[in-house]
Image (cartoon, rainbow, N blue to C red; front, side, top):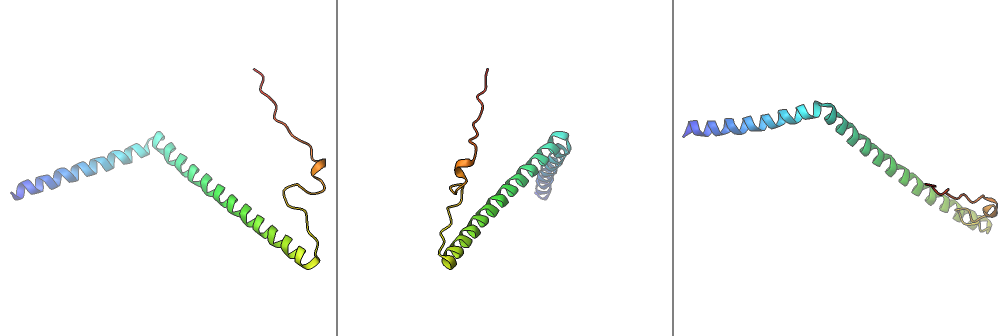
Length: 101
């Protein structure tokens, strides 16, 4: 009975080590390395995008605080942000070209 138990433990350990070894070998191939690099780049791009969104949100919040402070202290109501000010009519309108084919 003891021998059968240790045989089973050996088989399970052999299968587990074999799977780990084949996974490590797969990751060492050019395709595996490219997959790891691709995953890292996607993760970095997501982090950069998230950081940019947080910075834009913070800028917008701070801009609103400054507008409110100016309005409170001077009584002057600034035009809303986003291009609705006095120069809005002077901006050229850009249109996308249609693809001809």
